[in-house]
Amino acid sequence: MNLPPVLGAATSAFQIEGGREDGKGQSIWDTFSDEGRLADRGDIACDHYHRYQEDVELLKGFDAYRMSIAWTRVLPDGVGEVDQKGLDFYRRLIDELLDSGVAPWVTLFHWDLPQALQDRGGWANRETVDAFVRYAEVVVEALGDLVKNWITHNEPWVYATLGHIEGVFAPGITDWQTGLAVAHHVLLSHGKAVPVLKQRGGSVGPALDCRPSRPATPDDEAANTHFDGFRNRWYFDPVFGKGYPADIEETYRELGRWDGSLVQAGDLDSIASPIDFLGINYYTSIEIRTGSQESDVGKVAPGPGPPPGYTEMGWEITPAALTEFLQRVDREYSPASIVITENGASYSDGVEDQRRIDYLQQHLEAVSAARDSGVPVDGYFVWSLMDNLEWVSGFTQRFGLIDIDFDTQVRSPKASYHWYRDLIANR
Image 1 (tube, helix red, strand yellow):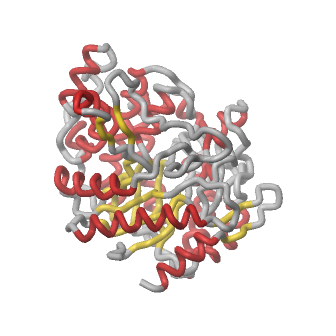
Image 2: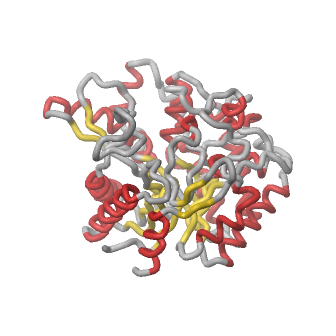
């Protein structure tokens, strides 16, 4: 296979750290947990806050580790006084990674907004853009001598849509205008943070999730184009200087969801700040039929387990769509570099997880095919390093290369972990 030069695994702070101590502030996901809106609580999760050395030991042999920083561990209220204990934790963690030969790829925002900022309107409030830029300044000043690869935001579509339009993720809002305001301000904060993160010579990009779509029949072409605009182009286009897609803007105006007044002079230029790489999170694709809702929720697998060709999230396994989407991104946007910042599958097979190996093998072959065709895919991160708190699904969905017993916190590497580490070693 024509593998990317960087191969690693990924996690996020809320999903693994636990450690609501040492001055850490309340995030919107802590609030969701406290309100009983998750299948399991996030107070401990994988206890990574206390067990990070054990976890870094398991990362040895990987090229890189994509992690995120909890905003509330650095600035408990999102603004104001810095919590030095939080920064010290991340410095210890990153030092351990570097000593182990593992390059840190650090995400600044993986959905865990400080509750204090949410109380002031959250990302729908334009002031949160400035708060994020200040947070980026604090982090890069403290860690920029160690970290060379920065990801500004993880999956803006998921955060804006599932959190503020569908309301199934934190903070649980169901309002289209709020959701689109959130999306704009998240993208704007990304663009404004890019030059801040580059001050210390860092390489910077966003991690955009995607859902490649296909029409069920020739009569569904228009519906497919609309879904693609809602799901993909609304985020990819402005990052690459194309502004918001005109066809979706027109639809949103007609439906009273968007009047363009949020977009101030210079905003689109800021969003299109030159990036060093584009992160893409890919799991599945979707078939679109006319009249379907603006959603990308896959078919829930019937019975006790998924049918062949589906993961336990009910997502169809479509590696060829990844190759096609990468080729499309290269053709339409010409990023200097692409990194697969997440790709993986949920299977509750214990440590003998051949289905996960098969999934990863198929998707690495899809990445290889894209590279063979000239697409500059330079990195690949498995989601996830370990089983973790899968947001509202709690501990029920297991994406990890490493099994976690959430009662004892015992880590048990799965067959997929050994397969992947061997793959890296034997390139």
